[in-house]
Image 1 (cartoon, rainbow, N blue to C red):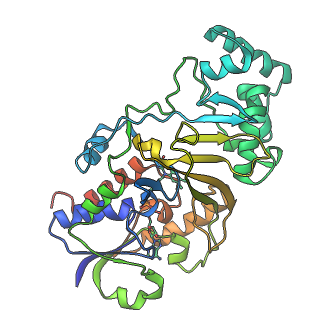
Image 2 (image 1 turned 90 degrees about the vertical axis):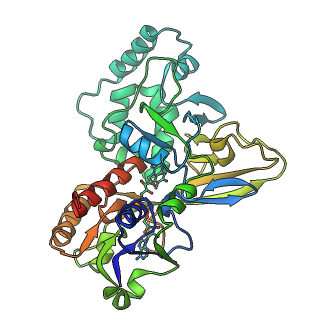
Length: 368
Ligand code: FAD
């Protein structure tokens, strides 16, 4: 008999397991995948940590969370600075003075601001009704056409004119020559990869892989006093209120034999409409790898079906309303704790999911 059955060996489940075992509780962690770590898992190939479920950069402003993760592993000084490739032209991201200089030859922030205002003014959109109008009203036509339109249309599989304006609330524009993507105080990549953290977190738990909770629900029902569930909330309730929708991704990963450096950067976004993928990840650069070969992943956004990985929740009004009904059921459960991105139907960054798991622990144990 276990104290906790934890469904999902991702960050939420692993933090919960670590903290509960620290308090002397017995935990069984199961995952339907053949590895621990959930979406932060790194698959080692050719000596390179491949971010199997997409590029993961740890960043936070929260000192407590930063200290917490550094208690498991040391982080390197990786600073995220992606670039955009528009038909062979390279631009720095996020939009900053380097981007504006390349686009228009402007040198000072004043010149850049004037250029943006001039473009916004020329189009004269006051009440944007779709994503295209919203983006142009925020940054003008050049940035929209070269760096936003194609990328966004590929990401959502629809024309920007058919997408709601609310998807883009604001666009980060920076009037300094600073290519650091994040504004957070702390960022980096765990030295040796994310698996190092997860392995330490699960050290004192029993772990069973390639086990789907729903295939063995009866067996698991009596195995623990409480369940921590980090899978899809609609699946837990057998979709009684309908299916919550996601956007999915496909990764095409290849070892490149004839060069040790394919693109000179971890991430290059392809912002034109014709290139079918949205970005290429070159994994070795996360850890300043010196291997003779390199590994790249092309990332393709795809429609989500139940057989694909659910990556990004589509938090539109209808889905949020459906989620609210499931949440009401979940709130009434005595012996099940729902946590993580799938059970909360929310996009969480890693620091947020760790924070949420620590809050769940606090709620469960208090000062006990
Ligand atoms: P998950 O990692 O999804 O773990 C849930 C686990 O539950 C999975 O392993 C799954 O197999 C298992 N499971 C589900 N159902 C069952 C079942 N029925 N039976 C058994 N097991 C089950 N965050 C950042 O901070 N920085 C980034 O750069 C970043 N990049 C990202 C890029 C992409 C493409 C995506 C999608 C997310 C990114 N994130 C990033 C977010 C990060 O991945 C999440 O915060 C984190 O992985 C969430 O952890 P979790 O435990 O909630 O979920």
